[in-house]
Image 1 (tube, rainbow, N blue to C red):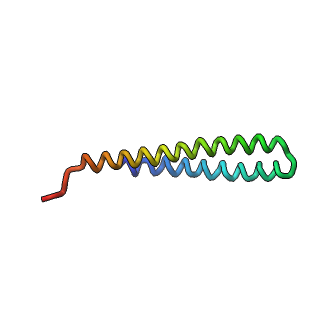
Image 2: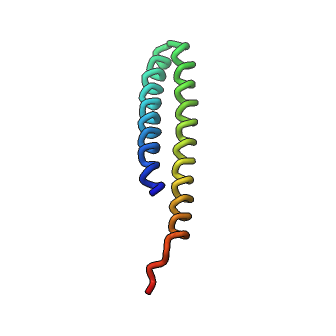
Image 3: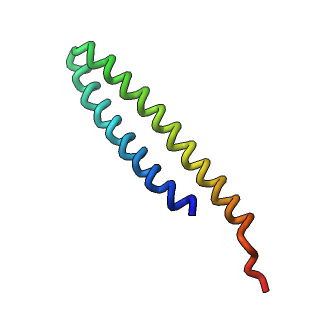
Length: 79
């Protein structure tokens, strides 16, 4: 059950991740053409990517642990 609940969270984080990557690409392109302020914005987007990536990692780890816990506490179907 927990796994299904986290899919929405995971997909939301993944969308944020993709948005930040696209923003980084745009700002980095401007930076390559000489816009120094765009370099600062590009770094900001990379910092956001780092944070979102960590959130994704944590979500995956929490899901793995919760799924393992659910499997341990589920009644056995032996008989």
